[in-house]
Image (cartoon, rainbow, N blue to C red; front, side):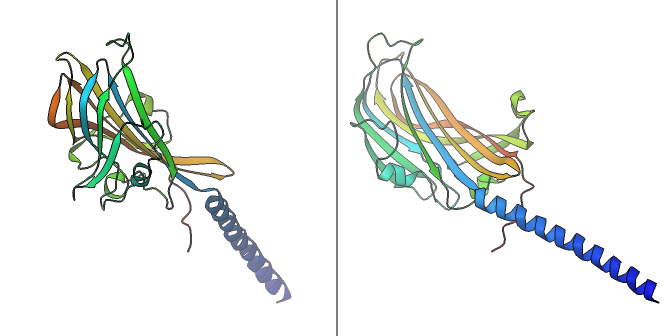
Length: 247
């Protein structure tokens, strides 16, 4: 009988030690994840021209989630976007379907010797931390993108995506911007903008997941009206076997 009791007690201690080790490991992993977790957005807007532009007005979509919340709006409203020229007037508009920024300037004047092979570029950029974990799995539903989004279709990811962690998905979509400016009939003007959301942490070694979206439009000659813009999205890039953070 004593032997049975000893064996039972030994088995109980083994189970207790294994259970305690698992619980302790989970606590250590969660604490490491929680304490090192950082979520950030990176935003850029670029206009490139090989010719002078006059009486310029642009309405550019600002990345926002489906409810209209945008990590970029405050930077525009406070004028803290890096690279913002002093003679640009910037006003934010909520259209109900999208958040737009109106950019107006009397002229965009490239320096001498600007040409198609050597165009003039203005780039605005901002990086900001998110107070919450960014949804990099389903950014169309829950994260900042260039809206309104229409005609979304899944496409093959670029070949250079094959060596990264996770199982990225890629999409093409359409959105819109407004352009009004005067220039020479053969002038080339390219507008691009990108948003990049990333969660990063360290549990024994660094880990992260992310999504990225980009819109781009090439225009020739003067413009006055709404233009359809091509967009690209890549999401679900990186590691997703992270612990759930308890309240």
